[in-house]
Length: 563
Image (cartoon, rainbow, N blue to C red; front, top):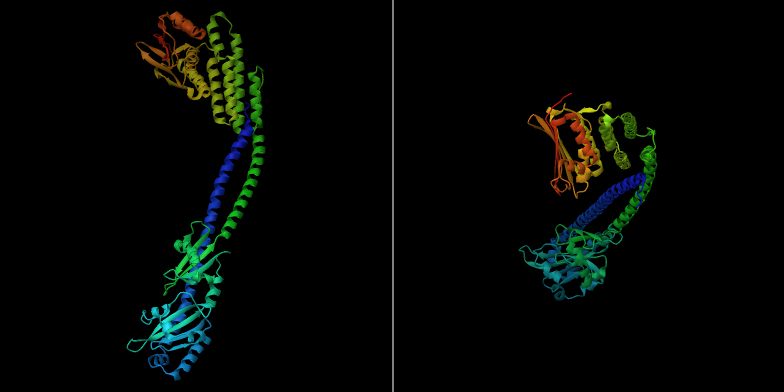
């Protein structure tokens, strides 16, 4: 399967990050805006119902004041206590005067305890006093101790009215009758119908018994089904209905058992939400397209030097010589290119030095050096650098490049055959660091030096082949993670250098040391022979291996030479 280019992957990655960020911000903005709109609707609805409550309170208070004034009027009390026909016209004229002064009043009715009826409404005048005294409004009034009583909506002469009733009492507190004021719906209806509660919103008034005092549809007062339909709003009290299609506000009218409820429709909220959503979508699409174009052209220009470097690496890996990468682009890319070119210079110089050392006495050293500069290790390292560069891991690219340069600098050692133990171990460290970048979690390593032996002089490139054997013949063949440990310890008059791995190992059949060395390959034999040439009898190598457990190689040196 063909991998997409670095440019495409970076553009897609940035696009996805921007998309996620935009989605998160858009969602937050949408929800916060919706919440703000909801809060506005809630506040407006509550304010409207509160103002309505105060208006009705003032409206009723005026009527109650009128009722109380009439029930305490001496002329009216005198008639109620001692009814006489000559007073009827005067009282009726008084009632008519009050009706003219207050357009909200439709009728004034006086029913005395003795059975006389005086009314401004001729249809009421025709009723018998006994019938009227049996009605709820009369019975409620005489049980309230001369206080104004509000009644639910009812029909009077084919029109809907609300009544204020109040008992008349004599000086001793005895019942004299009941005064009733019939209030027109016109003022109340005009005020409530103009309330801004959405296109489908409305307001209604109920008493403590959940009886309609006012409803925009006059016919509902006798409709049990309509009252049933209003129950969800009454039960909601304050807040959203269960279907979240309406918002209910309510407030009790002070001084009464009335409660005004406002049902606000939310079609405005839905419209604003829809507009907001489409606006956000439009802005998001436009922003994403602009971001995509900007990122594409920016990254294409930025990555151009990296592509040139990659092509150069591939050409060198294929065998092309005397080729150098062009230093261009950002600082990190120029630094990578500079280190890469420096590494190539060192490699060229190293190769020149190698070709100059073809003497027989340096055969083993030349073989070891050639082993370290084999194309596979270099190409693999270059592939690792290319991989890191494609993923824009410039810091690791610089680190690996520097490690590779240090690795070859130590291997060359300015043409000298001998090296200090600290430098030899550093050489191994650079090797393992580079291999760690290739194998990742597959490889773990540990190096324990002993500063007392840092200046020990020994042939160069004797430890790296042993570590390489541990990696390729032990760790690489193992399933899961493998560990390599290099340690230097004092022993008797000398020291022991130990290379341990927990790889696959090999079967110990009691072979001789020479057989075990051959099993380790040319590199292990090369190390053994060069150490023997240098240290003679003061040197010894031991190999211990257990199948599936690992292998340990120990180098014993009894003669300490320092530089």
